[in-house]
Every structure is written in C-alpha cells, then in structure tokens.
Image 1 (cartoon, rainbow, N blue to C red):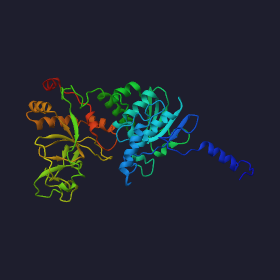
Image 2 (image 1 turned 180 degrees about the vertical axis):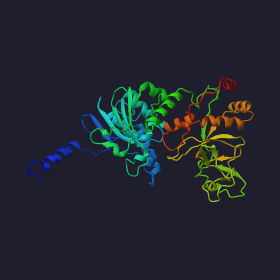
Image 3 (image 1 turned 45 degrees about the vertical axis):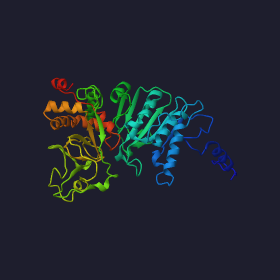
Image 4 (image 1 turned 135 degrees about the horizontal axis):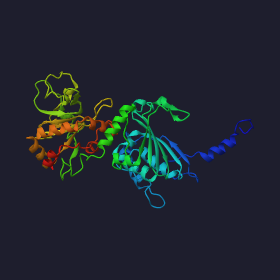
Length: 428
C-alpha cells in the first residue's frame, strides 16, 4: 500500500518504477524501447536453431520459413539489413549477439553466454569477423562440456566480453574452467589458465576467420599444442589448389553416399557366412598404439562376435552401387571421450559408406600420379593415409574442432605435411 514504512518503497512508487523500466517485446524484431542506449548489456540468449523453433508444430514448416524470411529481410531506417551475418540454418543466439552490438552505445560493454562452438564452427565465421573488424573482442571464458555449467546442457559454454566500436588487438582467453572456479570477487579463480592471443598470430592461425583453438588445461600439454599449431599454421591446406599433391586440381571431402536413416531398410546385419556389399559406418573404425588405425568389420575379420555392434548394420542391399576403386575415408562422428579425433583408413573397392563417414575425393589426375609413383592406387593411398594419421594433425584437429562431428570443411582445412623434394617434384 501507500502507507509510509521506513526502508520500503510505497506501492505507487514501485509501480511507477516498473512502468518506466520494464518492457515486454521481441528483442530481435522490435525497436529499442527506451531513448537512452545501454552502457552494459548482459544476457543468456536462447541456443535454438530457427529450424527447431517450431519443431512438432503442425504448421512448423510454414512458420519456420516465414520467420527465416522475416529475419533476413529486417532493415533499419537507413535501409541496411539488421542481421548482416545471418547465414544458412542460423542459431538464434547469433542474432541476439549481433543485435546486442547494435543496441549498446559506443565504448559500452556486452557480456553474453553462448555455445563455445561459436569459436570454431565455419558458419559463425561472419559473426567472428564482425566482432574483430568492427568491435574490440577483449576476452572469452570457456567451460568444457564436462563442467556441466547448466543442468541438462551437454555443450561447452563460452562467455564473451566485447567493447562496442573498439579495435581488437588481443584476445584474452580464460579456460578451460570448471563451474566451481566461478567466484564473486573477480569472476574467475586465479587458478584458471590464461592465454593472450595477439592479432597477428591469431590471423595467421585462422587464415583471417578468427577461430580460437581449444587448449588443454595442463601447462605442458598446452605449450606442446601451441608449438604444433605454430608449426602447422603456415602449411598448405588439403583443399587448396597448386600444392604438391593437388597440382592445379582441388581435393574435396565428401560425406558417405548412404544416408542411414533414409536407407535403413536396405542396411542389414552381417551374419557369419554372409556374402554381399560391406556397409562401413563410423563404428567400424578402430585404433590402438600397436596396429594404428584399421577397419573392424566382419568382412575383414570373421572372428567378430555374432552379437557385436559392428555386425548389426554392416551389409548393404540397396540400389547404390559400390565404387570399383579404393578410397581414403575418415570417420565423421566421434565420441567426445575418444583420445584420437582423426582416424583415416584406406577403404577397399566394393564397399559402401554410411553418412557417419567422410571420404577424400581425388581428381583423376591426382589418383593417377599416386598410382604411378607407388605402383598402384591402393599403395599410394596407404602412403597418404599414413601422412594424414600423423599425431600432430590429430592434435591440430582436436584443437580446432567445433563439435563431435568431423565436418568436411575441417578436413579440407587440414595442414598438408611437406614431403621430400624428389617425390614432390614427381607429383607436381
């Protein structure tokens, strides 16, 4: 009520304050509801892809399309698009981040909680370029999946610190941190590892896409990885043209030819004594320190137990024909706890790949050169496979991984180790 009480606001005072400062609206589509721009904006925006926004809704397809088209066409009074970094199947948190940068006054601060995939996924590259080219991206705090910062969230967490309209010269990277290292006094405990990434080194590492690597917590392991990144960053990338392997062509990474959901009725178990086309999935990739990387499929090892998972979806009976030449393949989906990220194998002719496996598409001229140099294509691929299974490349891949999927672009951007001059000359 409005009766005066010491130390309390009256009801009418409270209602007046709330009426002045509280607004309900659409943060992305509406205009800023106050005259004054904020000096500080903090938030935990929704981690939700536009295509999932209406999942399960009877009109979901139409609503998704309408929302996507509306967000893409939103314009400011000067005619510029509100969301200049909107690309592909956008996650809404990216739009909240871009909108925050527009709303905060120059020299103001933005602190947002977003998925740590923002640091490395290719689709976020336009947003990272905006943060670096038009603002001062000052700091990040990273929490790995194991930190379980939010109940039920299995993704890693990233806390962004940005000064609007500033100049980015250095990114201060804090982490990986644990949930119990958050503290009231300084935000993070002094025990959390810290790394300063200067702009020149950052640009050289990421080829101007401003991705930031995932670094280990242990000091010695971190230093070892930084040395590897520095050594490999300047090397030619696998999918670039005009290097010793590709010549004037470009190597491409493709996903396996069979979608396991669409073609599930054509994928059968491989029982003892079975004959047919081997169906290769990510589960068929194995590795250890003795044998290296190999295919653990019943067509190659008849001693695999009858009830083993490797036998359950291992035979192809669909209309897609198996290639008649060997291929270089890499698993596309990995377990987060798996020590090795990249597992390359030479896939024999006559095998069909599921979409949990990637394979390297070689131009005919490249395949011919490998076969000529090594006697046949299979031997040439085994040689190339050994190069790509190098421990340093695997460390690189783990540092730049956005998620548990080994994406095509991730493989295409692998540094290609140099080889001896005589062989390089014969392949050129």
